[in-house]
Image (cartoon, rainbow, N blue to C red; front, side):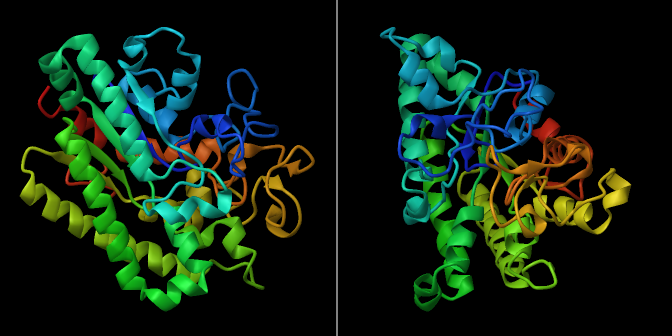
Length: 341
């Protein structure tokens, strides 16, 4: 449907970039991660199997976008641009929109750096296809942006940040910083964007575990909603400024809230506890080789402290890809793919 998918984001869509960051604390290259992946191996995806970027690629008829750091570390050839042709993933566990967000994970690729890496890929495509060929290729491709949760977790966990910024100021800073990066991408031929809004992150097991009743953390959820509102306002303004862009905003909040409030309608039986972990809600310790894991991953919305199961990721993409105006607007992903085709 499109020639390529370029993925920017955090651990929700990391497909193995962090495996190549020697001191990063945000890694998933060990069991029980990947236990339901095709070869039953941990790939660096924070999931029991595939993640939402994989399912989106499948729907688009593309192979999964490979991790950029794997491509550049394997590339002994001086010109390996052909491996970038169907897209690349720059996503990195722990990454944020704001540069300081990833500091607690020691090493991560913040959005600013992910965009720099894309510029190197763009240059490589220009060498390979010529500037007009590369431009035509890239303008038809999708740019998938899945980032912001770690910035909210960072705000929630830092009294310093909360002293410096009101919640509104902080989410506005996130949105304006993202806008700067989008303009940068646009100046290198990016035209079609998929924005994945923040889910109700206060409902993930790590946050519920902070409440005696295991209820969702309402302040974290309210900041997620506040950011989503700021993001949508920013996108409308950006579209007015750069009228050659098209985008699809995915209302992750509504989809995941629906899973949590009406689990049985979606085939889930467990919405609070993680499948893989230890302690209360399997949320005291993350998914490590020593952790317990649930026998039926399909029952659970959450795989570990923060991340959805493969089943939840697949269902999310099913809902937003085609024909769900309440979850994807101003157009769904399938419509976006056909723009300018």
